[in-house]
Length: 317
Image (cartoon, rainbow, N blue to C red; front, side):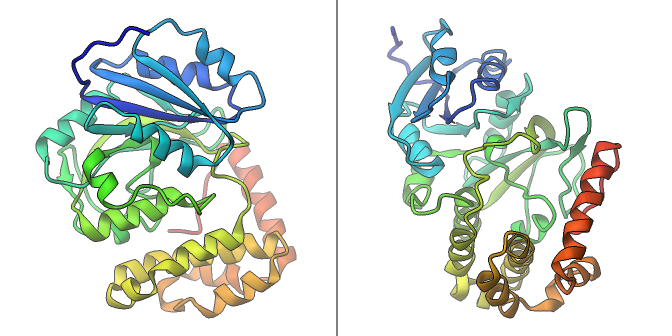
């Protein structure tokens, strides 16, 4: 493909694995951006469906496609970022959608806080095809871009940083060593923690993308509970000095304990429970964590039924 010599402002990195039914809409959402100074780098992570063919049908010289053997989201994103021509990186997963203002608002945030390490646009979550909710962030903000005072406290319910809503510089990314290729899940959370421990985090309250929580087969949704535990355990020294990080990780331990019990990972369930400071959990979380598996299974069914009927309740608030 013909490329101009000028570097684009953004390199948009899209890891792709078996998203033939979603990837067309995802790429269209990039091409419709009001800010158009970007390149798109698609890394096909060994897809076995028709995903690669769907991407190949786009006729736009800003799109570059690369293939790799299946290595997971971390490897795909690292590979894509290594090929980026722009200094500013914007991530997008193959089943998420940007609204037309995403890159415009992300650039505005970058210009407002150029020395920040991580730039986070606000986002919303599709719980079903019909039910969409804004991200629940644990801090006060209005309409103005700002620096997040306590990233970990702010991310107790939903994370301030969502993979398809963030940007960063290639320099800061490389300084941290990129995504950890060992982590087949939670690799994004791991990077955000490292970012927050080293850099300022900037936030734009304008909602610019949507995440489809109900879509199956995402790169990061496989049940790797042992890897999740390894990720959480990486920060023992840091959380001992940082109460907000300790609380944030304890909430993640709670979620892992519930997941492990439901998936019959009894060893991880028992171990993780001993690592939690229960002062960092709310009443609902303590109650669920002390409940037998049958109660959790029933609660999960009721929760799913309520969502189908347009009602959503979270144990995280």
